[in-house]
Image (tube, rainbow, N blue to C red; front, side):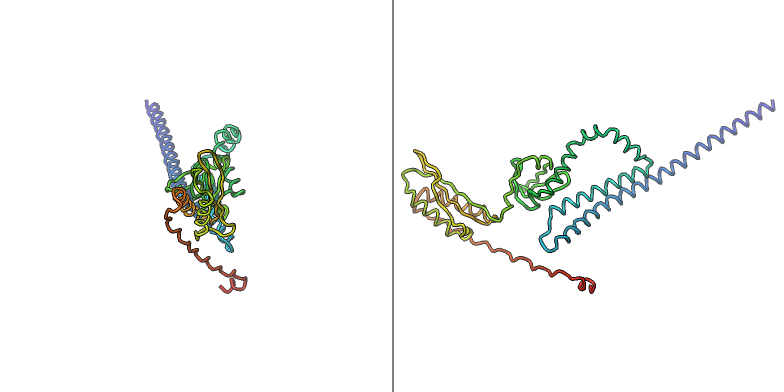
Length: 305
């Protein structure tokens, strides 16, 4: 009987010892996991901070590279976006390693399933490739007025994946780079000068030469119209019912809308009556003086401070 009691006591003691070992291991594992999670959160926070810092650093470096000329905002935006995404990817890999995920195994699985991943990310990768091509060929820059896929607006940003436009009525339009690169891009800000065409149709009984002369005089009296090439008024079409006239004038691209509105109004008034009073032409635009160029520091000046 005593031997039986001793055996029971021994087995009970072994069971309690084993349970204590399991509890200790669980507590140790939970403590390690908690520490790893805390460190992972810290790494994640540092990653997002470093991503923003890297983006700003790349923008400043690219701005200093164009110190002698105007800053390339398009390149700064694209370079900053690329640096931000690279830092975030590296930080996410570090977070996975910290919480115990074997990134080498993940990369091996991704490599084995590269075809499926490529098909799944086809749209995203095409946007990145299109963004690189847009950056290389530069069909537009930040600040240009463009027309893409029937949308007209000012380019606000060229990102790694999308292009952002702001329409004249201040609506934000976001387009994938793949769609932008695969569509027709009309850049109305590329050239410094544009031609304004005002077309009007009049009755065949009207005095066409007098109307052409009035349109040309109106264009020549506009201070925003360039004198070289000179304005031109001509007949562009004719039928049994009407005669189509057009007045063409070259202007600075910033004055295009104002001059076109004035010429269309004058053409309509003169077409209705040769003696119609015309509103005064728009005032000449005062061009801001270019900022003075800072002299480039020599090596001696930089050493002096």
